[in-house]
Amino acid sequence: MDRLELVTRNVEEVVTMDELKKLLDEKPHPTVYVGYEPSGNVHLGHMITVNKLIDCQKAGLNVTVLLADLHAYLNRKGTMEEIEKIAEYNKRCFIALGLSEESTRFVLGSSYQLSPEYEMNVLRMACETTVNRARRSMDEVSRDAEDPHVSQMIYPLMQAIDIAFLGVDVAMGGIDQRKIHMIAREELPMLGFKSPVCLHTPILLGLDGTKMSSSKGNNISVDEPAESVAKKIEKAFCPMGVVENNPVLDLFRYHIFIRYPAVTIERPEKHGGSIEYLSFEALKGDFAAKKVHPLDLKKAAAKYMNMILEPVRKRV
Image (cartoon, rainbow, N blue to C red; front, side, top):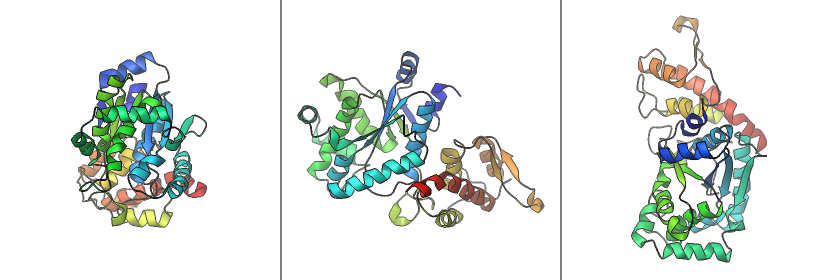
């Protein structure tokens, strides 16, 4: 797999592909970043972008992780003291999931976001951004989308200025970050900064087939006990032969196959015996053809996910 394939696998959107190809051709070690609000347990949703950062490291990109404590505060996720503790927990989780501690730059947002130069650039961008656009950009990520606070209008402007101040070439995030990234692409050049390439990862459904939410219990935290992980996957939505919007298959596509080149579905001999798959597409095809039973798929998913998460449980 070449650099471009590594960087773009399991990505929903690249803005733009031509810019990314040019960047990889011209720079041996471009810089990519993801910003995370330290606001709770690290879960499967975070793992999507962590996995992509690991891919990027393998492709020779330098990785920056922004622990966005001020963003979390503006989005009403707790006191600064509470958020600082969660930020350190997040860092330990990301390293345990496989990010290289030596070659990943972890940056706390408040370490530079309170500087006069940074604040002046946020104000300059505020002069160029309408209230409606700032609000629309926050609709997907805001805690109070129906009745947002002024602080949440500042949030997307800061996120755009982060890209400039961190000096990154590529901004990565879930597809829910797209509107914020488009503000950065359009308005940073007007302030004298370069426009970033943007990589957007998919937003996955929860294990029950509905929107992922910790309050619903349809998500998995990366430090969750093995027994709980297995129980949640056992109850997951996984109709026989259905491959679209199947959260168990998503575990294989986005988490398992990127770490294991071969995956074994264990079955009794009376049901055909165990079978090894060398690609997600082969497994998906057999499941669609009803050659793999949902229960066998779930048992394998639980086994491999617990293998992936065991280093996190040991570290945090």
